[in-house]
Length: 360
Image: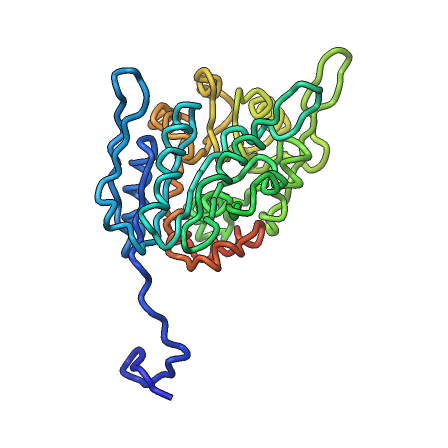
């Protein structure tokens, strides 16, 4: 059997020879260009492509993908942002055109699945728009590499993966590794050399759903479960399980909309004697600038990611918010072989992502 030279000049069998990865090109929606530039800085061998996003005088999109001849045989990733119906049409126009340039594979990274909370019908006549968007994404033409990967961070309901057709492989990732790393940093900063004591974090959940979704991702932390209970005509927040007294509590959920429930939970934990209260939510949606409610509120820090670029710009430099970039997690996914990406599933994916993620 022929041999090649491995590390240090030692001979090794061709059976273990790994060919260099093919050229990777990252294309971005206009909203995610800044995130894309950061992703490329965290990778080796990923090239940032260029798309001109313009409009005709009648308002319809006038889009031009540059250097399409260089996409042939490449692994192409599109970093999407579906923050409006118009943006969905524009970006789907690009996605449906990319296969004709013969890339080896296409991967879609959609950090925030915007209609995830409308995943079911409670009253006849309601439209489950999560299923509609899933069907739209499932109709992107295939390329020679087979079904495309669709990566979404902290989708609202895990069962939404079943809304997609066979032409798309939904890969559900989590941004929880960013929180783990942030807690590691804060723990190291508070370590007392004399007493050998350090700050412990207790993970709190605003409801039973958040607990069921995320508690396995915090195996070494005590937990608190909050719940809404009816008090006459009103509903109030109470603690169903756990104690906040003297604890450094971190409320964890997938997204913040109006923020009312999260604020009530933060106030309750503070009132129960919590030393500090933090919050981590992957997606800071904040319709109608709802983030303003958090200024001067009960939280020492509210961590969100840059999955919603418009809101990220508004929150930068505003207390108590701190924006954590998804760039290192996206970069890690881009450098991972396709068969590994397709096989990743939470919560195991979270622990693997934490292990592979570079130190902040």
